[in-house]
Length: 600
Image (cartoon, rainbow, N blue to C red; front, top):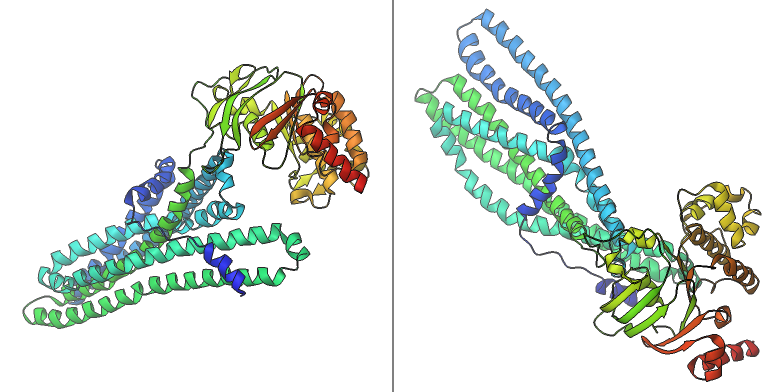
């Protein structure tokens, strides 16, 4: 791996979360079982209780009744009865376990479905600022990998843990009833075991946290690499990219190996404790037999001692599942606890009708604390006007468009539509009446028809075709083999940039917005196509408020108002002719573009 890749990898590391095991958070996670507390959960618990009861009873049948009574007293009738009884108990246990596994698996799958559904629904409602600070890959990891890691906990872990706790308590009670001295002698090793396991616990938890972090980095890089493969190949950076991936993949491998090695220590430790307990049983048990303890009691005690370490070992495995679940749930709840920066008031109004008048009143806005994107902006866009925003990159054009759609809220001041502050309007109500066409349009996997209908899912096929015809998209669609039913893959890579842009125009127009925002929407379209779109827009934009952001100034000559921005401030506004006559910033921008064209 190159030095540059190593540096890139080094600076992208997250830190493990230094927290104690959070039982409050675990209870919150277990709260997802509540909807099933009257259906699947009771069934799973009942079958678990039956299975546990059978396991606790069988050793008494074998040790005390079978050994001390039927065999010792040579009672064949009792022997046959006990054999039939023990066989019946095992059959009952088998039936109970079959249904327990079935119902716990169903319970686990339903809970995983609910968690993933709730997480995705919540993410859909988060503000743009949330996505500004996170890669698509890291979000994908939360929804898929982190939720998947909870599956084992809910499918087996919770019910099995409850079963093992009850089994362990039952064994202890029976052992104390059978022989308190022998039980106390064996229990001497438990404090030592508890002390060592407590030391292991923190290391194991941190290891699984690190696994989740490394997986997030791996998935994030994979997502970035696949989406950016054309750029990678264009700049012949394949080796650089592979070197970086090798580092990320290696770190992920090492984190898994470290976590599994630490987790694997627990089981041999339990087995060693079992060996010590067995040695104590034999040594002290022989002494007690010599002093009057029945052989049947000793045999029964040996059965229970063998059973005693089994739930402890499984509880160690469940604890590992809890640690994995804790590491994942921390990341899931981090997203679920994220509050939208743009939220809806409880008394927000439904905007039934909209004229489309837009007002900015002393608006300030900053994406971060370092600099303002907008500085005390006040402007009015009358209903039905076409308003163009002009300025150098970073002047605040797209920020104004984002505030109109309420993707962000102003840091100070207010944005109003038809005299109503956007904060007082329901978000869905607002965005149904505002459509945005971006320079880098997104095409979803599916047909051409489905992509255009995304603007208004209830639209008929004829309405979709009319929208496509209005922007001239039908010309290239009809040339496709399957026309409107042509399948396009994610991001529409089988289409040209101009064709994708035409689809986005059709999608926006189908939505029939009162306000249409064109953010560099014609930048990727050739001149001939642009002329067609300009003609279509003259008809389509009639009676609508249009906000056009364009570096290609020839596209905004007919705008009702042109607003010139610089470093977040309005420095000029007026019509094209007025600003040209003024001979200031706008005039220089137009002049420089025409000089560039002449040079070409």
